[in-house]
Image (tube, rainbow, N blue to C red; front, side, top):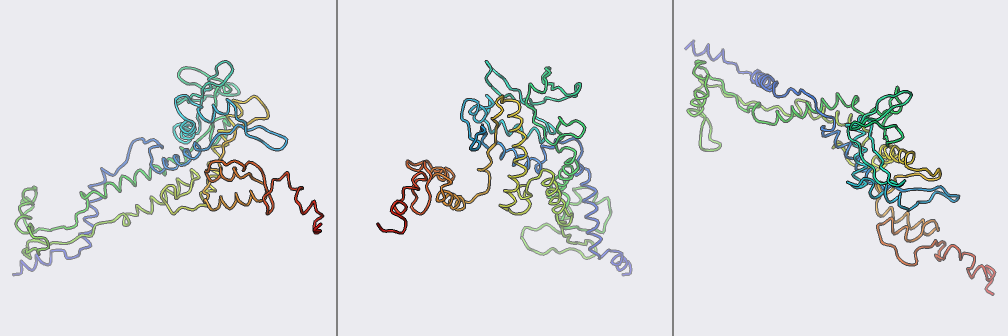
Length: 398
């Protein structure tokens, strides 16, 4: 009798110790599988890839206009060079894929640099060939570019540089250093989450057995015990177990909130968004905000557009009054009602033609709308002086 009581007193009744044991077992058993080692490319991080994709896709969607300075303002030029750069700059791809490659290379594998080789035929631009793997090295007072066993001078290639180096202003630096630690944290968080979501390391029930250790050291011995007392064919049927033989305790599984994984991942995603200068909602954090998105277009996207259009202008154009311009107007988050209201107001004030307004709305042009009109009568701008009330003396009815 006393022996049974002594066993009962020796048997732990605190579920906290069982829970802590389960947590320790989970951490110890999972430690080997959770440890992340080795090198992973920055572009393979999903959060970084999402930010890079957002920027590259938007920059690649902008049309490239060839502009010319004029006395009344700059006008768009439509000639063979403009068509080549805007429609088919690369013979094996489209303008969008070509520009996206430049942006992606600058932000990831190129570490702030992307090189393109212009190919000319008879003095005319024939192709713009991407140079994956090209590298720049100091040479004298400047630098040279090496690619596939050939060496090029800086004026022989298009060099798109992001975030110039302080010691070598001609070289871009990219985001690799700033993103190194945060991408490692995100990779570790994903590994931890994947291991935690598997059922291997979080049992929901722990059964303590009073018996010989050798009896339950094998899987067959443990299964024999479960089949004898625990196994049942009826769902919900209570277990009937000897009081002094088994101690069944339920363990509440840990959640990702208990491990603070969600908070850490959210913070790391915001850090990536801050480094890449993209809105956090593009990385899955927070809700869409039109004002924040439009500011992203005006700042981050236009930063890459400036790099590209200035390098194209510097290396491909000879005429001093011409330049390339990437048009970002179609990228802004406009509502159709807003576009209609702005266009109608501009049309009524004689500042836009009717077909320009229709083009804003994605509609085809119509005959008779290629002239400026104003006032309440919507008469042509060059006929303003022919109104009857002006010719008949204003207030006079004669």
